[in-house]
Image (cartoon, rainbow, N blue to C red; front, side, top):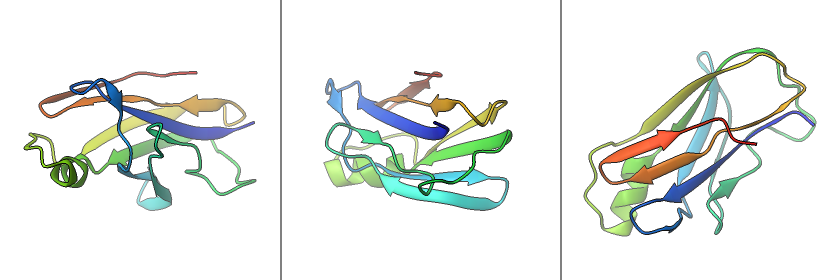
Amino acid sequence: MSAITTHVLDTARGRPAAGVPIRLECGSEVLGRGETDADGRLRTLLPAGAALDAGAYRLVFDTGAWFAAQGVDAFYPEVAVDFTVQDGGQHHHVPLLLSPFGYSTYRGS
């Protein structure tokens, strides 16, 4: 099944980051948006049955709003992760490891 999903972990607190606003873009088009669930996951960025084409995509995490809601001062107001889909038939999982003053990402499974 083709999909783009993500998972945000608050590494400073050692737990999932629930309620992080995220949007999925392809070029100048917004393909989907949502917020992470209680487990820090967002599984529904693309509408059900939507085709995933090869190309360049971007996940934009509204980390500034999320940290503000937590009462935490943070350095990055948003994190944008650009990645390339070569095979639209695959599942693409792009996790974000987040702290107030740093972040890391990788291609997950």
